[in-house]
Length: 122
Image (cartoon, rainbow, N blue to C red; front, top):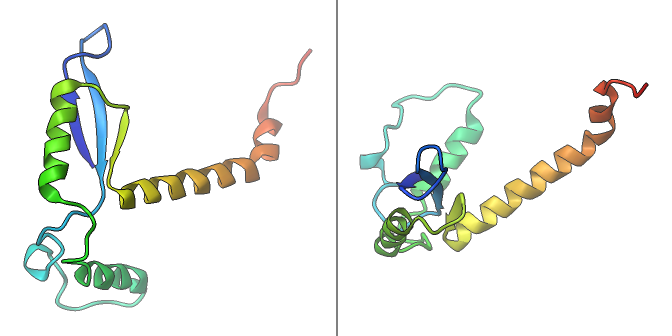
């Protein structure tokens, strides 16, 4: 997540904050030379290793263009004209929608219990 700050926001300080959330871009970032990977592993972290392997297999297949993403991050910072959460990339959009759906499901699953802590009306 990148933070782009421009001077056109809250009246008290004149600062506007945009959280720019880019998806994966086609760079060399997800290669072993740019990741600090452990020489040995321990039990209990299989999911982390699976995620790492998936990331190591990703270079060259990322959907995002890093030059276009950088240009849009700069545009958001300079213009100050973006929503608080600015998504970049269809993969980032899909992940964000999934997070919202999971959070909505959790909120609804706990709805009945949530109301039990209210002070009773007199």
